[in-house]
Structure formats: structure tokens, C-alpha cells
Amino acid sequence: MNPRIPLVDLAAAHAEIAEEVAAGFAEVLAATAFVGGPAVGAFEREFAAFGGVAHCVGVANGTDAVELALRAVGVGPGDEVIVPVNTFAATAEAVARTGAAPVFVDCDRDTCLIDVPAALAAIRPATKAVIPVHLYGQLAPVEELQAGLAGSAVRIVEDAAQCQGATRKDRTPGSGPGAIAATSFYPGKNLGAYGDAGAVLTDDEELARTVRTLASHGGLVKYAHDIVGVNSRLDTLQAVVLRAKLRRLPEWNAARRAAAAYYDKLLADVEDVTTPTVLPGNEHVWHLYTVQVPARDAVLADLEAEGVGAGIHYPVPLHRTGAFATAASFPVAEHIAAHTLSLPLHPHLTRDQQERVAAALARALSAHRRPL
Ligand SMILES: *Cc1c(COP(=O)(O)O)cnc(C)c1O
Image (cartoon, rainbow, N blue to C red; front, side, top):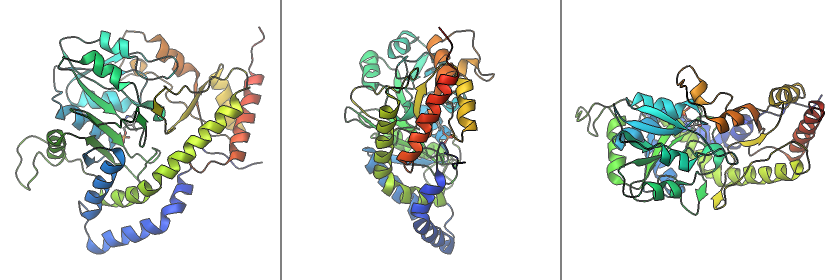
């Protein structure tokens, strides 16, 4: 029996940076600088440069990053924030935690990204912001949202948790006047920590300062609490890990891109598989390689039985969850939730493994093909 092919391989990534991380941890332990310290500031500067923005504010996790970015642009109780229904629950949770209400919209059938015309049509007087989610590793068409919102006070807060290193028409998340983006360094993300971590990215000095103030108990100076804040810090040990991984990220993203291209090729002639659509103008970083297939649950079970660790992102659209249930229906997101399948994809995946995945997928599909 061949060894299992995991959806992500964090051990292979760790093997590349193990020595650097051990040395960095030893320094932090020797200095007993467990909060703050030079590694955090250094990572923030390095990640801002990598992300093409002026400011990066490290926080405790991606959900906090979205919440604090929303609060920085003034979202609060009584407001509405438009959220695509096909996303991880954290996007909507962050809205709810500000006291605002998430208002869901459907997504595009091909890219699974936010349906921009639907988002623009959902704008009401209470709408304070829209969150385009850069799902699976490619950017949503933010410029179309910007054009539709021109002249209005509605803000755009980008959920960039899945797209570290991605660009759209040479623009990066959080860059440009008034723009702000939130990202997550959850271990399985393209840039993942060894625990929770996140960051807010922006070119706007004032917004960066507000996020930093909110994240550090409402003040930038110890014991000066100007506003009611929270404790949301990027952990020092995580900053050590993130600095080591950031140095490899361009190479790792290139490996993901090559693997995605190879899947495209392997699956081109496999019946019943819809491979992912890249929006023209996007440089994709393939956080996930998601296909759409019929009889998805049976196919997933067969893959599992063959040792292929596929996943579903996401099995339940947010309006069908207990937390965010609404009577509204979002047919595209519901269709995607029922048919989407994420194949193993990570920087250390081999061609041989990809060939095994593609062959197992073809077998599973033909086993569950319904006669016409
Ligand atoms: C991972 C993720 C988040 C939040 O991340 P945490 O760090 O787990 O809080 C938010 N939005 C999306 C789309 C994500 O994938």
C-alpha cells in the first residue's frame, strides 16, 4: 500500500526551516522576550515589503485581523457588512463581533469568488463595508467593487487569509488609498505559523495606527488606554517561524503554481471534472486546488479509501449554518458546497503523488457515474 497523500504537508515544510526555527527560539528563550521583541517588528516590516504595502500590524489570529480592520474603518453596532456566503465562518464571525450584521451575497459560478453585481445590489443605507474574500488563493475583482462604490461611503475590507503572495493586475491586498486587508497565518495557510497568528495590511498610516491601538489594549503607550481595545498580539515565537517561512514563500508559491498546472494537465481529459478557473489578470497562489465533481461525497470517500487526503472548502454555506442561518437562498454557493472537492496541494507534493491523485479521482468518478 502506498503511503497516504495528505492535503497539506506541514512536516515537509518544517524540515526545511527546522534549524533556523530552533536557533530563533533559543534566542527568544535566552532573552525571555516572550511578548513583542525584535522578531515581531522585523517580521512586520518584512511582510509589509513582501505584500507591497506600507504597514503590517501583527495580531493574534486572522479572525481578529478581520475584526480589527473592520473596526478601524468604523464598522460597529447597527451597521451592515456584505459578506460572500461561500467563505470560512471567520469572515462573518468577525463582522458579528464588531456588533454589525453580516449580509450575505452569492458567489460566481466559475471562480467561486464574491458576485460583485450581487454585492452592489445588496447595498442599503446601513451598509458600512463589503468584504471581498480572496478565496482559494486568488484575488476577487476588487477594482470592480471600487468602481461600483465610487462616491459612496461604503468601505472595502479585504479578507486576504488565503492569498499570501497573490496579485491582481499587479495590485496586492491592502494597497492603495484607503485600502485595508486582513490575513491569517493559521498553520495550513500558504504562510503558516506554529499556532495562531494574523496581520492587517494597509498603506494608510492612520488605519494602521488605529489597528495597532485597538490590538494593544486601546493605547500605544503602556497604561494609556485611549479607547476600549483588546489584547491581540502576534506571538514572538510565531514571528520567528513566520520570518523563516517568509524567506521560502516565493519559492513555495511557485511550487504550488507548478503543481496546479500539472493537475490541470492531468485532469484535462478526465470526464466529469471541472478544474478551477483563474480570473484573467490574477497571479494565483493556490492555497487550495478545488475541482467540482458529481457524486462528491461518494468520490471523497473513495479517495479517502485510496489514501488521498482530499477536503471540502466549504461543506456548508454560511446561511445554512446554525450561527448565521437566514431564510434567503444562494443557489450558486449551495451548488458549489455540494460539488466542490479540494485535492492535495502543497509545495512539497511530488509529480508521482499528483499522478496517483488524478488516477484515483478518475477511478472514483467512473465508479459513481450514473448511466444516462
Ligand atoms: C483562515 C481564514 C480566516 C481566519 O483565520 P484564523 O487565523 O483561523 O482566525 C478568515 N477568513 C478566511 C477566508 C480564512 O480562510
